[in-house]
Image (cartoon, rainbow, N blue to C red; front, side, top):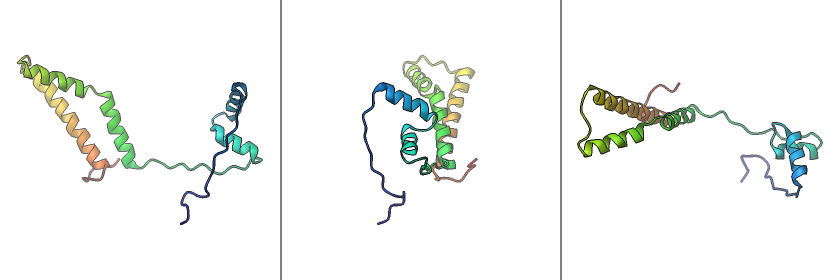
Length: 125
């Protein structure tokens, strides 16, 4: 069965002192150490690196996950739930607005994740 990734590669190990490795890393610059060493050993010949643009769906999922990471939704909702259980959650316009805002944010993230995963139609931009 042919390999879709191209020719099979095998690792080669060498031992370097810390100074030797530091020198090679400095010479490599932005390239990976393996890429730099391969280029040097093979007289400048180097296979092109495979790189794929992330799909729109992956970008959307990453965006939603970033939103979740930056939000205080889980701790805020946990505190509100605890306060409601012990009878310490005053229901006033501010509390209602906070609950509505949290609910809307969760629903928006849910919708974006469902679009990104192809479960519903929606804006993929």
